[in-house]
Structure formats: C-alpha cells, structure tokens
Amino acid sequence: MPGDAFEATLAGVFQQSEQRLASRLALEKARTENLQAQDTRRLAFLLTEAIEEELKPAVLGALETYDAAINRPLSPNESWEKLIRQRIGETADASVKLALAMDPAPHPWKPLLTEEAPKLRARLLALADRHLAALGKGRRRRRKSAIGLADGLVWLLLLAAGVVVGALGMRLLGG
Image 1 (cartoon, helix red, strand yellow):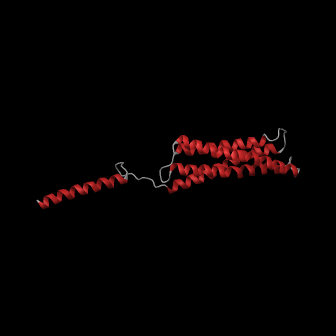
Image 2 (cartoon, helix red, strand yellow):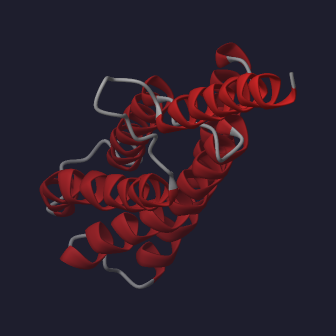
Image 3 (cartoon, rainbow, N blue to C red):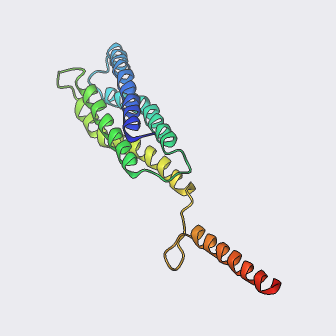
C-alpha cells in the first residue's frame, strides 16, 4: 500500500472515531446533567473514559491498517509508525478540546479533564507502542557475516563455489 493510500486510510479511521466521539460526549454530558453531577469530578472522569473507549478502536484500526500496509513479514516503515503515533496524539488532544468546548462555562471539572489529557494520550500511545514492539519481536533480522554481507548471500556464494569446484574436479577426474 503506497504512502498516500496509507495516510488516507489512517485519516479515515481517525475521522470516523472523531464523529462517534462527538455524539458519545454529548450523551455522557446529558447523563451527568440528569444526575446533577455537573460540578463534580465525576464528569471529568466520565468524559475521559468516554474518550478512551471511543479512541481505542481507532488506535487498533490504525494498527491493523499498518499491519496490512507493511504486509508482514516485510520490514517495518518507521515513517508510518511515526505518523500513527502523531495521529494518536493529535486525536487524543483534539478529543479533550472537544470535551472542554461542550460547555463554555468555567466548571470545576475542566481543569481535571485538562490534567487527565496527557495521561490519556500516554495510555493510547502505550497501546500502540506495545503492538509495534510485538511486531518488532516477530521480525527476523538479517544477520551480517564478518565481511559485511548478509548470511543468505554468503551461503549462496559458498554454494556457487562448491558447484564450480565440483565441476572442475569432475573434469580433472574424467578426462
């Protein structure tokens, strides 16, 4: 999958999550208003949980897109991994801003939600990092010989040398 197609697919994954998140945040706010918990810590944590629950599928979807794009067992693409991490961070920050913009009044839960934003971002990035690290463990690294060539190439050269020596030996013995 070329880079532009990967980026477009990744953008689509996160755009869908942002749309679902907006409706989920409105729902959580309505629930807390019914419980009259607007000015408590509860709303900040409910919104944080809602953001995390809505963004986890997007993160997992982005990682699945990455897996399909690198078509394992090919080598990883560090620029795509960096793009995934960047999009996760941007989406987490935008989600918190969206939650803060739901109500213009200065409520006591807003600073709590703002304090929770870096933790939320770190949890989502940790989820992605665990997945990417697991991919790294499964990759077979190409070993180099003492002269700097890949082991496969050295074995191929040894095979070719054996065939040549064998052919010369047969010629000397046969004729």
